[in-house]
Image (cartoon, rainbow, N blue to C red; front, side):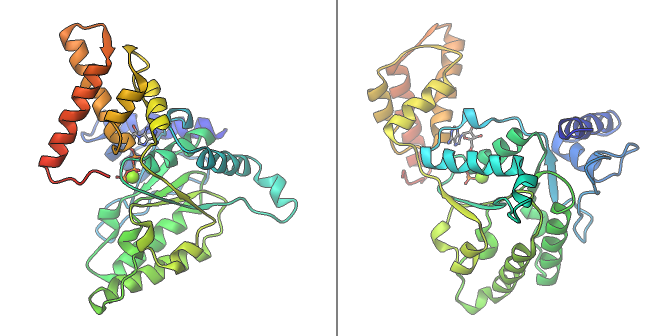
Length: 312
Ligand SMILES: Nc1ncnc2c1ncn2[C@@H]1O[C@H](COP(=O)(O)OP(=O)(O)OP(=O)(O)O)[C@@H](O)[C@H]1O
Ligand SMILES: [Mg+2]
């Protein structure tokens, strides 16, 4: 069976599971993939049961990616790098014939809501394989040995199948931590570095961080590619509006709207668009105007400020 087929299998199996169990889709996928159900999920593709923590909690979530790269607004540089990486993934054997391997370990660094997690999903989507997300809450334990063991299990698992492994908030483990209070975390970080170093699979491992500058240099060196994510520029905001408002008729002064949204992340702009779309539907208004966008942006900015968020 091809990769698409196996992906469908996981989801089908998870849904099958859900008839007899309650819980979120993610939970169902985990249970299905964990092989606890009557059917064995992802029988092909060297599917192993998902790794469990010492407390028997799944250390990863397996999901079917739904987002495409086309829905993301990124810099030309980042898009080019991502397309090259996809090309390498699609031609692994061609590279291998010359003793070469694709780039596999990516670090995406930048502020919240700029598309890092979504990029991991889009890469999995483009390759037609599942996205395996590390569940930090299950991985981190108050015992160093346990955390290290969990990390080991995840990377071992990641080598045995075809998927994209996404590792959000890697700075949790790998920040520059000089003080002795964080000695434990430094040791976990050392384990993670070693694990990344030893990782020999051609599968993509995508780590993300909001604090690129606080990662120590040893961590940076372990990645084949580091991509910087930023809040959108004025022209990127205009591009984002095209995508997020595409189902609606808009009469927008692009420059004015983009100015009103400047300093927002992509995710925040999406939130403003959703505010406006909801309002317009409920008010029975057919056309979204510049004033709608500017007012909504201002009211969100105010709410963020009141909540103590500093606007970048
Ligand atoms: N560059 C982008 N282009 C289009 N939409 C985006 C972009 N970045 C974020 N979004 C929208 O915002 C949502 C949240 O983005 P995402 O989870 O990828 O952010 P993140 O960078 O991982 O943030 P965090 O650092 O908080 O985890 C996405 O699901 C998407 O709908
Ligand atoms: Mg994220």
